[in-house]
Image (cartoon, rainbow, N blue to C red; front, side, top):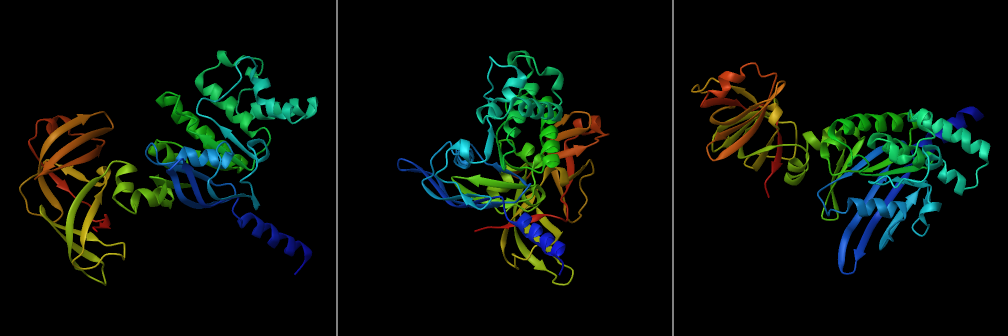
Length: 375
């Protein structure tokens, strides 16, 4: 093998090593254990988002990585180096706080260049780096403006540029979009993802907004009560949740109980008995067997709604229309079937007026459904 070939193999192996490793992380506040053994590897250039309800430990974990909170047990390894005992300024991580933490008495350029000045960069190199960063976030025309003269979105860009000034190995984002209005959040979400992909910077993102997390992330880490419940791509988490909590937390969902009546091992055609009738699906998982009690995970957008009612077809249930909220491109509906209320999203609803006048509707359950085994 040539020297060039050996070097290429070494570079490839180096790039395959995770940038950040969390090993059995625990955090106590007195007798209260906030983190109960978190282990995770984050790849180079990957954007990983921690999501979960308030109090699950996601922000505490981010602060531990950044060095703003002391670890109780476990190891944090950054690019092969254990950094448990290093202060924040020596960790090669940078954080964007929820409130941006910008200096109001400084200009945009002075804020962005603050870290470079503290690290004693020469003035000419500092000026060049600040110019590059402001150009990157499209704020070069605002370099002499004071922070309080900027919009929320512009302030967020300044905070992002400042965090990137020293080219950290890991960028930490602590709900950086929570102070923005809904439309600006969408814009800034795309901006962050575009910059992150361009720079290939390893990023750990924390948000309470699961839709935001799904839109921006390579992988999601769903947390609950100080533990990781599931790690996967947004599609994996949404389509194949590991348990009822995750299914209900990530997006809207309808649950329906049933029992596996039969499975055709060749075609994977599966019949599920429910109190509302038989549901036939194509089984895509191998962790359920005949006779198992299951919970069907039915997403609102996967269900078809029609005004026909009274026929007897498999996977079609008759229900009472409880509400029908028309909003142009989508209608949000609720339908009562027996003792259960289902949420249904109807896209491009052309029969809005007819549905509003209807009492009975027909609900068609899709053949592709994820199942959770009942314990």
